[in-house]
Length: 556
Image (cartoon, rainbow, N blue to C red; front, side, top):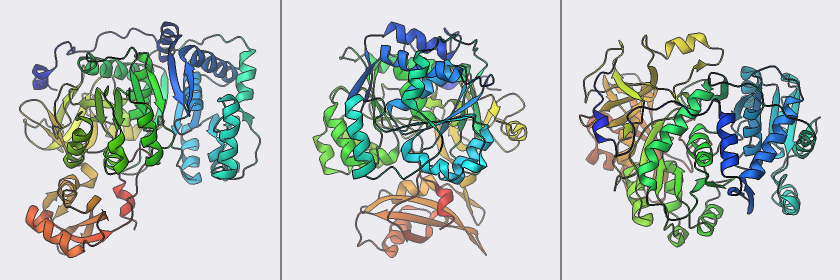
């Protein structure tokens, strides 16, 4: 569909235009090569304990052997419900090595949401941390699982782990009571260690992950991501970041894993990319604890790769103690998951010396589609160029390609695009064009230079008296107002205008009034874009990666 790719002329030197052949037959093949190649390196730092690549090899192999002993059907789904802890890494890699499909579950899910995902995926096994066991217990009669594996917060941390468990259960009281038949992870690993594991035959076209969409625009759907899709995206990101890593001074790359690895952004661009580079992954179980998070940053000044979202960067830079953080080896800050605000990006660069390289992706694209070059010296405001082997076109409602600079739906083709939605053939057909482009549901444009710019979500677009209003445009203006910490904009039905703009705002200065916000918008926005209502709230509803959930505001 796209004959001209203007972005190619802006590719940094050494970044290939197309993705070459994959060097591995599956994710299992890929990770086992990494385990051997980097065996003696530290792979994971979790709650102050370190695990080498050899340790991860042994533990994930034992977990795979245990799963294999359950005699599950080929391609069986194994659901994992974890924050960023070592047990998740072991279970995720072990599931893939056993030839099964990983179903990542948001650990913040309610019992209703967990039930829906377990049923939709047809999961045979659930692996979770005991903090979330009571969530599962509420729906136990409604779901049919073969095995449930439960781990404690300090399961694999030796003597230190016993103290961590005691504090979690009795001091912090973050483990609600629960009681059901299960197997402890340590017991599963012990049993697996006594078994001979025969690696199954797994190919590039087998399913690696059922990655459920965030549901920010409707019912969550399982994106079918093949081994081919994930491996391709790891290779694409690795090639794209390569020019920016030439300034690396330490012997081993250090990745900060603050975003939950059950989310596709952190899974691919942090965990799996980190393994590919033989890096050290610093796991942050609870990035919402900003005080504890800042202590982690102070403890690890050698961090090189820092993926995050706007809300996380915003929370950090507005803490006075963040000024004590020194990251002299920071090479790349990647912003994804939601739009990065210029005000936040400029403040971040002023404090760290490193710009935020904004990128764009979706669960359906494994996830990275576009990203700014790590060689950029400032925040650009756009989402960069399509990465190697990726084609992006802008289509109108009739699937006709629009000229450069025209606003339409962003549609994507590349080796990272999913095989479809799990058990939803109609949804799959509806999201693909006749010639195989994935219709993202996002509205944007391509500049003459070949940079892609997001305007908004198609379904979040507000129509005021026939004029289209994109929430991001309005939000970007309002957060520039002194005393406004963050905000979200939605449309509200209106008898005469069809819809009006309504803003939910979090104040850092509680003297600010609705009238002041409306006056500010009058000075900075054209008439039809101005909000008619301002609601002040203490916080905005967010997904587990910090993405603001506009749909939930509609229920307030």
